[in-house]
Length: 240
Image (cartoon, rainbow, N blue to C red; front, side):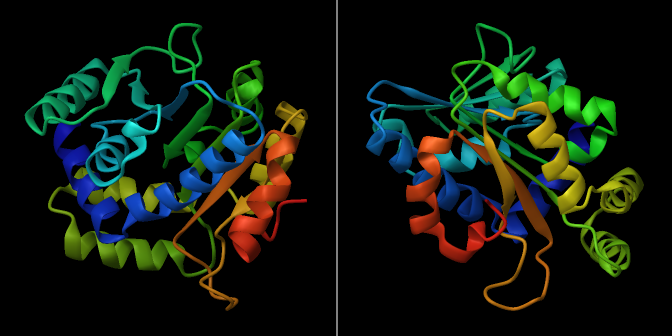
């Protein structure tokens, strides 16, 4: 599993995933501050694996100097131990925990994830999203593969070229095939957490109809939405 997650880290690097996450997090944090949130803001990466996204944010941004706590949580203790080892080795201001990201001692203000949603189907997807309904949650941003006709073929080609293990190649193609479309994700989110405004972020490449490899299911407290729309424009085109 460690080997597979090292492979997945290279995938995130090549798709500049950290830059994409940071842009949306900065806009969300700014909206929270403008809406009166003055205390610390905890970001929780759900199913963080070896912690690439949080470690990238810790290394490449100044969020930790803006009263923002960068954390990751995973149910796999081996992956969490590796994430903490790497963070310590790199002297990064972030922490990783083994447990339930939505528990009282680990919950945050902003939840993020990458490649997690497609593991949940039907009622399980709604149950997962319902856990965002606690009073501290201000936003969530869950990235996953965007399904379209050529996605499985493109995924297969990329993974054959770039991944060194058979398991990583298989998992990458299967993940693309299992990915949820925007309607399924948004419908589940609106049913699970109606108190948050849910939509899709970053589905298209610039102003073209071409789909991105990843899109994101997002949810925000309604008070944050006007400023986010102003900041992010058409990238939040499917947010009501």
